[in-house]
Image (cartoon, rainbow, N blue to C red):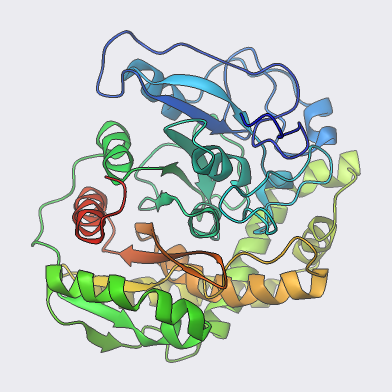
Length: 399
């Protein structure tokens, strides 16, 4: 850890570092990793980003299977990382334990809710790290911190022993500083891809490109040309004729209903203190109109069918992971909320449809990182990781 880094801006939780040595041999032997503090590690508390949660929960009786798999594959745990409170936020702010420094843009937020895990990789403190993604919580910090990140197909990897937010949206995910390590972790955790065609054609999602600020579009132009060299000329598509705002709204309503069903009893009983924005989101979840949540669920079913048909032949979607770079640390709550809504209209594409998405650290806009996302059909995670590795080589990114 850099000498100037304090507990407040460290990606790791304050206090003694939780470390577990992995197996002596295995496909991940010699690699160090970090774990977002919503995964259980036996004998240790799982704090979930909030002191009241940590206070009211017993230490974990067992280690989450996904973490156990990494240890058995030879990777060694180097510490638990900070998360946004109850994983309900995209900036990475945590007023209780400190907001992790974004090593790639120190004057900006690291992104959340897997903020510490992304920052630990960006700082070179570990080779890879585990996070989770409900509405963008791996993809957005990967883009903001300039690292590789993957949200796998929904249900591909068990989330037993991990705290839930929106169970029908939640996925584990991970970050890496190199494309090959991202893929090596996938080889340990992911099931084999189902039989299917090779990946291609390439589809450029107009909705998401129009949503991005011009400097981000310019920064991603050369990476898109490199991707076209691999997959052929991109075809332009609109995946959301209803508009990205409609995707965000349907996602928000369906996910909020789940968040309150999952955590509402604890919130009501404990009356926890929350930092800025988190209390508002839980209040909105509590007051969610059941008819709007039902409309969100119905829309989701139709959108899943639409995306299955679009991607069944092996097509790959490409678009900016985030429409803007990370917001600056001094951004107002209103500015943060506007960026959140604009970003989640895009992250909802894979989120609603349960698709795998890889973000590659391909450029910078306004002095900060921006990522390019690749999305494939559900169950094509390994093929997508292999494509990301090929693109990284083509662009001269760390492989």
